[in-house]
Length: 441
Image 1: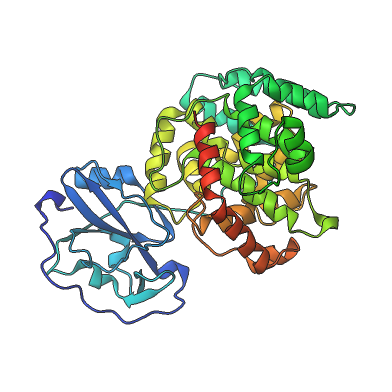
Image 2: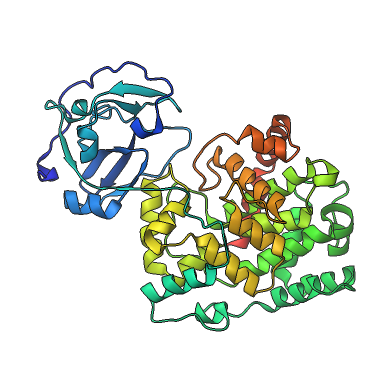
């Protein structure tokens, strides 16, 4: 392959291609803008593949990193359209028919492989894409501990021990979290028990009061005490779930690395929790899951980010870099490529070890498996829908795609309900931002 630093800027106006409506997935070509201190380039790759950032760096001899992804601004795959040097995946050059992503979401332009090596443009090619298969989350959790053990043995000298949290060197649960879990398992608990636990942790108490008095609930009059916030506004189950999620979040430090272009961990968590709880309230009563468990599920849906960042910090840096360059793929594919298992497998096993409700651990474990039909399928399906809905707003790492109409109907929801929830979240965005900011401190 030619040395890329010899390439110069595009020298001609990009050629015009005719529209290509509804092309097959195998023909679609996407683009990623990558950059380092020496400048930018347009990288073209098949949509059906995983762009290996390390291979791009090796091929170009440059420390390139993908630009942050913007949901509202698709990247065109027409070569030369940005006036930048172009790097093309070698396998595309021999294709007889291709569909180049355009500036319009979901729109494509027809081209041939030979069009991608225009001699008038600064272009070169190389092999830097990995093929991907079907959704990598295993449908059977029976072998999850073995999967975790294999991954641990690859990257550390550890072997799976009696307790997963000890094997992973996870800090002990905060006292508040331990007491709330004990309370959940006590059939004779009452409101006073929960209030006492919350009041012993001023940071949790302040966040719960702030959320109860936010525009999301618009209480009149505002809550003056924890008791009032629980009884009149939030509800017992939701407050218990909020307090537990906040306490668990204090267990692990934020990873040093972050996927640029995505919301922070806590911003994604609070939006997911609020949206999932709100969607549950729109479901028909006979099928409606517990609002408290929905909130906790949403709050911990991406807890695996903290777990992987804590246990595998070096590998998580690679995952972040790959996610930035492959925003068309769920993170499960990236996790599988780097760790040989999705983070949800590790997370659900850890939360199960901590004795969290089965509905929560199942929903997190199976959220990427549409055919899951277990006892807690409604929670997994609702979480999947929530993440799809927020993905259209760039609020989760879910690739932007409209929620499946059949999934919406199966939950007893309507498109009007989805629109109402998005409107409610938008009106409460300032309060949600503040809550996320407080949780991250």
